[in-house]
Length: 232
Image 1 (cartoon, rainbow, N blue to C red):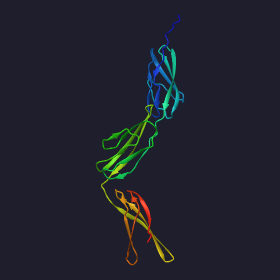
Image 2: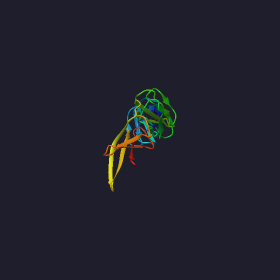
Image 3: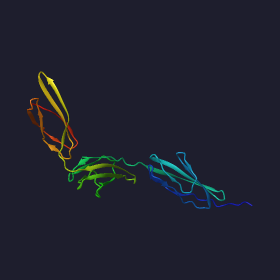
Image 4: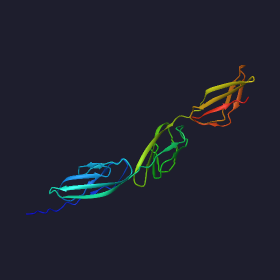
């Protein structure tokens, strides 16, 4: 007597994902099964019914499922799985230290996509390069998440420090040179406050305690260090 068994019918769900995002392969096969063998084109083999698998590189991968029934009949199905890259995410801020009420520009250097900004104070934006104003002092974490047209996303963050309004300049270095009996003076001046300083008056004293005052002809913004050469 020859017994002919009905073969199983292999099938599964799972056809696309993003780099390093686990993809659940769901077995939809028909039959009384007791063995599953998943074969990936990169050489990996799994033997569970519904594996979870991550791909580390973008591209197209062939995935095959071989099923075996309790009657030792087998069937195979293969699919191409598309693995997509995550978008590039990058941004800079116009000032890491600023007093309350001053607009801060978030300059977006990311790949095209949907942009989700979270400013750390409960406010959000979907603009490409938003301008945000913080009302209170504190340290805020600015998050940018970018999602591409395949649903892949990535995020980065930077800290912005909102500090009290302070005018403060510091002389970090003074250099003198003597040429033919004349002394030249230059100074490095740092804005260590939180507000820009416009046209500050700079004064040095000679060996006879005589003041020499000159006006710096520009604005020194917070965090900036400038070099000024006295002309007198």
